[in-house]
Image 1 (spheres, rainbow, N blue to C red):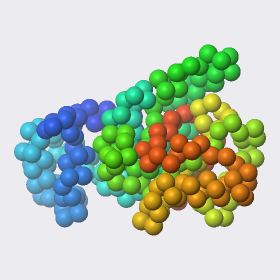
Image 2: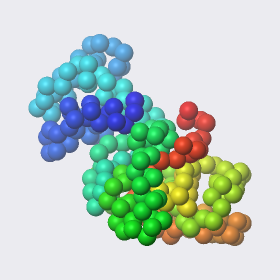
Image 3: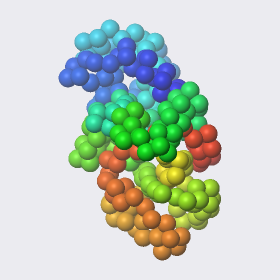
Image 4: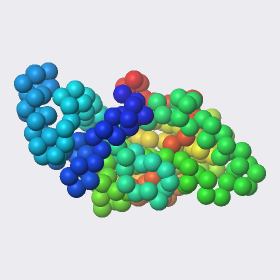
Length: 253
């Protein structure tokens, strides 16, 4: 299920009690751990329970669609997706790493926007274009709002920003071939002269800021690569753009 397809469905379920939606219901009540979505009776029970709780009239078909989507995204690392502009701090929905990869490589989503930004940037006319027109994600987890204190669930991922790269292809190859840090996703930044490198972060072992500092020190010492220090923020916003040559770890294909 692509994000744009989910968005159209999400509009049908969007707001009910306290401004929450059907995915909040699944998050707050882990009913899917105890019911079988291949059993018609179980689906009917949960759909009825949801409608009573939410005060909605969600159909059985839509409820099952949402339940299966939820089970899919929670079986893989997921994180929050935010609609433009940057000062919007409320997420629209969750994405998996493979779904954001689809957004990056498919022309219809961000190709025209990315090209326009790079043209304006080259002319010194970009100003606040990126923060105004690009959607973004918080790769390190799902959040109720974009703030480290509002973390719902850690994704086990971290994005490393490498800016002002003179040889993008060389740095990409270096990172992809590193034997200590496995690449989950890698794509060129909106400006075309930077790299977004998504790796595992092992939150059960390391605090976000300390792991980030360790990775930054490692890259500087081994490859003389400088990282954007804003990555130490757990709720770091990462703009999504077009890159047809983005890399996704094959395990997610």
